Image (cartoon, rainbow, N blue to C red):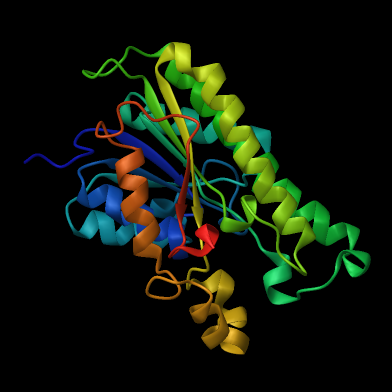
Length: 270
């Protein structure tokens, strides 16, 4: 069988580590050309890892394995960066088939606190990266997908947003993060409806607690408890989320849009 993403062009934001890195590598293994997007501190817009370090690990793994990839500096909260990111992908590879809006922050994972103690800056950070960043990704990716010819399946593109299980339920001590991930779920539904007539899919994956650098402190302090709250096998790994992303970004996903895919070891069915 041919790789499921053979020949497709995919952008993955937040690809330097954790879930984003796992998705980028899984897409490469399934035959995609991957644009690795992340913040490369100190680099001006448009400078890539090939020229100046940064997200070199994900990029190098793909290139060393003979894959096709590039890396672009992109702050997802900056409209100019996100517009450039899509343009750079199209300039390099000719089109954009898949957009994964993965980049995110979780200030309260490092410092859980009730809403009356939550700072305005922590709230703004969560909403800016997690919600506004996904909005920009959907906005610029869908505009490009609408402008290009459909693929062999008749579809113009697949947008995959990364939400959270707390985009479905609430969480104590994480009002800002929870609100931002609920925003991602609601945004996904509206984008799906806007894009459906143009054969562009938009779905959201809602992971449970997944062991990544972003959650490292939380796992050190309460890993056993986090493991136990997931009925099936305990906490997740980035590769668990990547497998779901491959399906949602492939032609196997022929009739799903606006869907909330819980990949959480059964947490939200309790």
